[in-house]
Image (cartoon, rainbow, N blue to C red; front, top):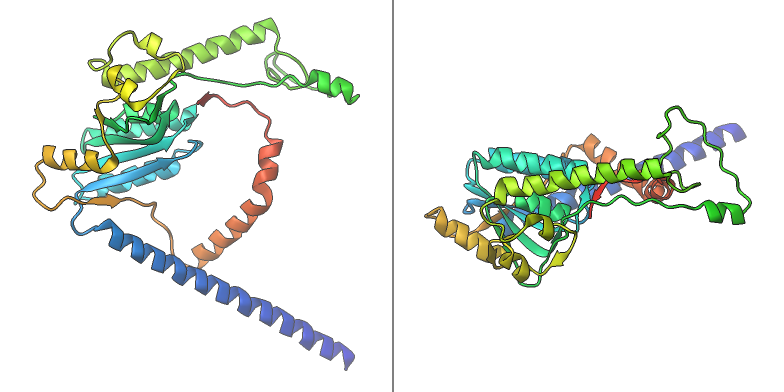
Length: 305
């Protein structure tokens, strides 16, 4: 009898938890739908012929930006795309992937850039892939360079009486190991790597802006930061103005007959029930483990920053 009561009580608890979870999912579903509907009203999507794709923060992945670029490419109503860039840079590989996709799409649909508060290093790199760049006079611009950082913690390990042991195959495999300093041979290897990627950066800028750069691009690409105004004087930027100034200029240049409006492109969200449950699970997982993963990840990264 007691066992039967315990079973019923346990079942009741599980039922309550399940109902609570379903309510949470349904609430999240309708909240996201309401947000999307509001966004659509603000976009004036029935009138806009110029799409805006926002690139914000450190560039560590290319997938979302490329997906939005492809969505804008397929949108037959859009006659042009503006990349709204507000980024200090990021990882080399994803930045170069975005640059490449901009070049491909621009052959069919013109892509322009509008710089916000900062468009430095990788942020400038993807902006340089576009046809024309607008910046604000005070936009932090440039920082054309490459960096890879290492930490030598050998003295700290010595103080803590810790003796790390490394087993490797390949003499360069543990180059950058924080337990020791780089050897001269490793330092030379890294210098050549950085110099090669820096050359790629400069080369990609010159592919798009060779006739616009004023002065020696090598001297302009020493990692220095320019204001938007100074960047325009050096030919790194074409015009001064906000996103809306750029949009109106493009609207006029393309002779678009309809009223001027911008359509802000968002990443397409899957809104199925199972997709939403998966999204919630992923969010909880990230909340618990992201900071630990970042702390554990001591591998050096090649960065445009």
